[in-house]
Image (cartoon, rainbow, N blue to C red; front, top):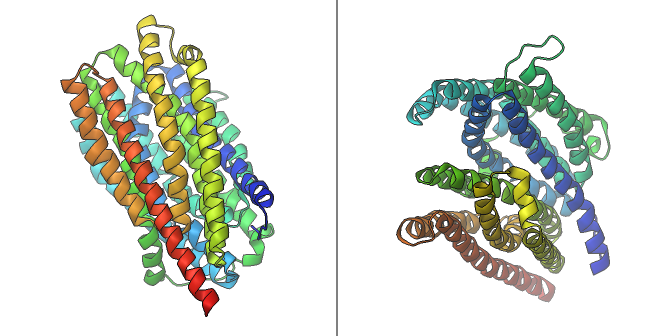
Length: 456
């Protein structure tokens, strides 16, 4: 990152940060996509078992990894303030925190996994595959969380192209390992869906080692000498990161877990409706990679300018990112409206499921537009280290407003299954309006500080 002086320079720098993040997010999404698709070719039980395992793991991982995202605004603000000497300490403490979280997840999983699966009433074979898949995946939890810390450090310096390259390297590794372990090729054991868990775990070790090598040996990261000095554990540093990261993690958890809850509630409808819902939600998740990537780019840019006390520039980056997200949201919405049937055909040829998927995809258009506003504003607020409002918004908009509204519409009105989508859209729209007001307030507060500083 470097200081910019015009809108054109800001736009250029913003896209330099954004495009690699977008490729990275799509690459990570593709990794889970290939896990599911390749497991499906191993058998229906393998597909169901991996799907159950992923649905349990995803809210846990996204929520807890959200805690580690606190490092991005911390490092960006330090570099913006030219306090680079403080960065290695912050990164190493984040690594310690990641290790503690990973170990806690493994221990909790060992105690809670069987009771959770037992209560789900699964087919015995599906339950076994889900359990063994998660156990296999657990061997990669520690490197996965450590890699997330290193990625936050790299991205905070605006070097998002590096994490993009690491992801692009890891994707073929993951696909190859899936091929070898799921189907038992070239003398490897045929593990079915469980092999996808081991493939992911090995891939996580690979990307962590690659990331450490880059940070230690390649500039500008090697200039910070992150792994060159031993630091004792500092609970004060952990407290600082948890103060920012815990609300981020809970906000992400509330957002990801709501979709798992809706999927469970959908079980009251017929198989065609459930399949159509899953197909449309899968594609909506794919489109969500655009606003979430813009959100992450905004966090980096805004935090850098806030650290340098250039609050006007921070505000300009906020509006620039939000404007790009809205334009991209409109573009995706129009494309989804025009190619509605073609998208549905990607998932099914069954006419009943196809027609329902097309209807769900129309509601996904409204998802897109709400996310195009809410996600980038969340990123801007994180750049200001203002995270508690986002946490409360996620809880209220999804669990207090969205889910109850959806439940009522689904069970009392003729909307049926579509009622859940309407409820979630209503919650998202409320969150977008609330966050817009919050961002305006934060920017006014910082602008007034700038005025007081100039007077002094």
